[in-house]
Length: 313
Image 1 (cartoon, helix red, strand yellow):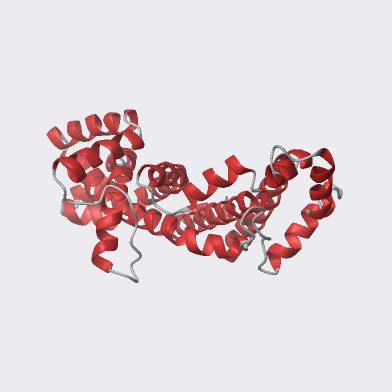
Image 2 (tube, one colour; image 1 turned 180 degrees about the vertical axis):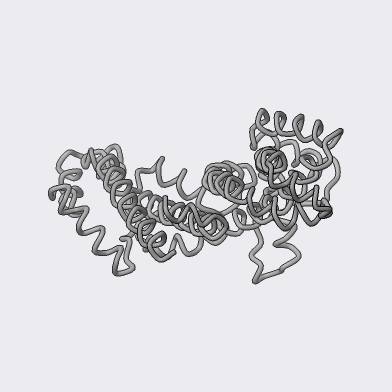
């Protein structure tokens, strides 16, 4: 188990350096354009060149990247080119909103997909056919379309939840729950349908194995077979699907935050990219890479716990 964790950490570290360096090289490829975004389009060439020097953009790329990494390891991601606010402070305000949406969506996706997937695989019949239909619909309908439909249904036609805005749980837990209900519901429609269909396939494949027929021949109840043996063997493929789904949720959450005007990383990334606020963009990329690496590491560890053969590979 220790070897699994060490190897995954080394791989995650390598991925972090590669992704952040490539992103750094892309966003800092045109220092004059960055400086002009900061000083304004009407600024003179002399003013632009002075801003390039002030921001340190005239230094070699590797030197700038080493400086950024040194600040990162010291807990300093630099300051916004436009607001002057430390990037770490900005992320500390925005990231909890995105993380709350992701965690709520992920937990509900896991619970609902397991229940629906197992019921579909074990019982078959109309639950199985309904799940297949819903998986196609969930994959075909974009999350922002679903979000707009939910707003029309439950904020305009039936005013149960706010259409936009976010309330911190520190202010009011009830208002916070109301403000995230529709965004989470919009994410769940696609994620649950997809994950449940994948989980259903994994469970169904395990149910057809020889050891399951042997357990049935010995008189073990279907419930005991499913919960003691089938779920454990189907857990590896299901965890892999959930890992990929979690990574996909990042993109979905960014879009959903835009629809519901939530002050998360979605609006932050969109605004920083359009303005050319490179330190903020790099901070968001670093946080995203770390989050994805943590998810992949936890998934690999859980798979190794469920399946000892995975530890060798």
